[in-house]
Image (tube, rainbow, N blue to C red; front, side, top):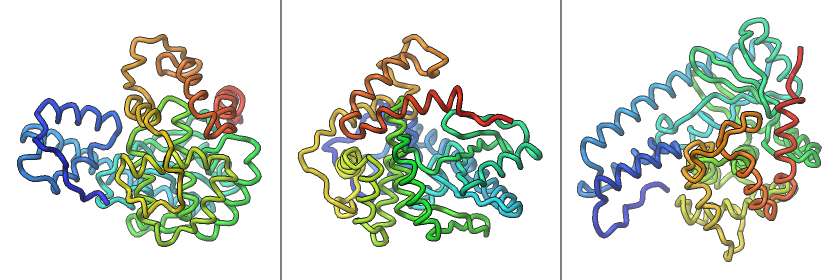
Length: 350
């Protein structure tokens, strides 16, 4: 996976490469694309000046990831020393499954906590790092040595309250199957493979119901399937998606991973309908990009700060509700309700 050849009859022009870099930035995959250069012939490579610019950007990514790893090891040690049990989500945890982990862009460090440990971690911050802020989605954030950190009370981005009991049940079922990622000789907890996939894939859906998400997260999903192919319980995983209410949407995701991201179909753990129409979904992903900030279709639209900083927020949320209701109805309904509740009423209070 990830070692194919560029199938073009003629080399890309300088303008083509500049456009590719623009979209790579929008989708935060510039490091991943940079890693493909070693598989291209000389006449297929971007111009030297652009390669130099790209190399500088990748060097910045590597340096940032090195700082993040130092902070992860430090914080994990501090939390565990204080009887707090953190789980590393997304970011550097998923990066470890890439061919070159240091080239995956990680925006922040995401910690989730077992049982009541979220409150304990929050109390620890109140005493030792009080400049944190509670945020929507039952989370909080702050900076630690200039690295953005988020704490999450919810393990999965499944918003339907009807799924709360089931999600707690499966989290408990897999709680003794944590994987370990060694960072600076510190064994950091990661979720079991099935739980990582549910977490990463439900996170993608959450952002699609919001304002968009970049191709990087789809690469994350593909790398997880690729890395865990021999250990995933495919029957159990399909049942998990079904009971979580997102199986129909997961079929769309799987077809995109195969048709557009390049994951061999043999690594998809269960069959999906062949006649699925995914063109509308890949178009939305492509134009929206990471968090929808650079979606040119909505530039210049009115911004309603109480809803979101993205322009034309209410229209975009309505369109996404209509698009995804067919495939994940409970999530489509619950997302705006829970998001509003958590933003205005559901924050922690002292």
